[in-house]
Length: 335
Image (cartoon, rainbow, N blue to C red; front, side, top):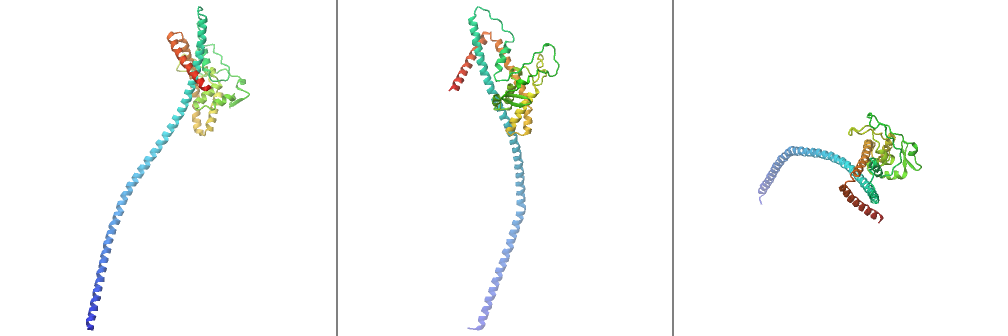
């Protein structure tokens, strides 16, 4: 073979190899440039689009946070309302139970008195019945309203000047002797007020502020004294003909407040809440006095209308119905 031909062939091969390498390098450079352009376009998009999305999400977050805060405030207010309604419901249940108990006892007592009057009328047919004095309904009202056991107290003496106008000042009632407030096995309520331990054990289990204060007031004063008293001792503006009544003893009112405060402390209430609830004690006592006087009025109307035939028939059937209920209750208790 010719050596010169071999040299030319080698040169051609080398030249072709160099050219191919150069082309490949150029292609790689072009690809790199395109890649850079694509990356820069993506980076520009990533700079602008996420900012708008971030702002939109941030606005949504603030709106949700604001709505959540409003919902929490509404839930807190609703919780307070629910708590107040539950307390009112508990007080109303306790009061309803007491009224039912008083109603049953009242009807039973009236039924027994009706039997006595019927026996008297049947035994003395030809004898004219004397007219009952005016104080009869009041006397019976005292007996019927005094259902809950009470401590005996000295009743205040009625004023001799009944028709004279009283001044708008508290009327001072007679002082109860200290011996009547003290018992050998009594519970000291503070302020020199003591009640029997057995009665205190019953009262302290009563649920509800209103029921507790009213029951304790009946134990301390008794219904006979309560109906002749008022909370402030001032003349009632609603009733022009009404006279001013002696006020309740401040020491005993303070003793009731102290007992209620101690009861609320034992149940874990705060001092602020206790002070707020103690402001209603006088209102509870006024309601109790009003209830006692209302029962007395109802009994008076009943006895006043008792001579009418229609009314007597209606009440006779009511008494039969109540007596049946009482008998059923007694039988169920015996069982």
